[in-house]
Image (cartoon, rainbow, N blue to C red; front, side, top):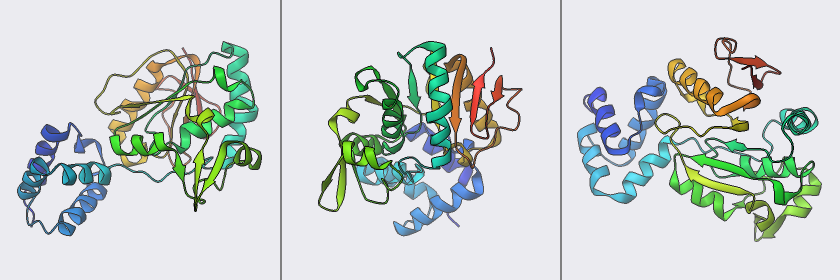
Length: 259
């Protein structure tokens, strides 16, 4: 036995400000126990001491907690709906100077996909996406903008030709696309949320949260949106109680703020 997981969660919060109580416990505990075992540590207390003493192990732990599976244009049918319905509707309602937030953006695939999607409707010079993630290391990777072939498989062919350059076996996203994205660190469970957004995209992250934590995030997203602003979530995530959270459902993954 590794010891008290409750004490470990408290120590981790003191050390990282990551609240493990907001994650599904069985799933998260298995992942953490696996990492501890790989590091040849015999107890939670010893692992916490290692994290305090070793910056590399600390960063390894934060990276391990962060879900970083991401692809450009993931779930193409939803991106098609964004292109043909959501973006034109937002432009008609609010004009072209839209505030767009890609939350829990991981390695940048999603915010860069957003820029390309909006580029069919708005000049690149008018597109600005704020992209946030809890993990500093994945933000740094996103700012580099280098991806493997699998990551960009879903990118429309004209965008591949226009906005990517092959570098060895990888693909570099263009400076023109990168210039449209502002990356920042942000913890969805702890930090204050920005306001006045017309579109918020947060996909395939909240499935790892408890129901209470997920609803709390949805409420905060609602407060961050202007009236008639849109939230775009992952297809594996459900917002059954969307009416209670002040949303109107447009499709399985698109919800608009009611008032």
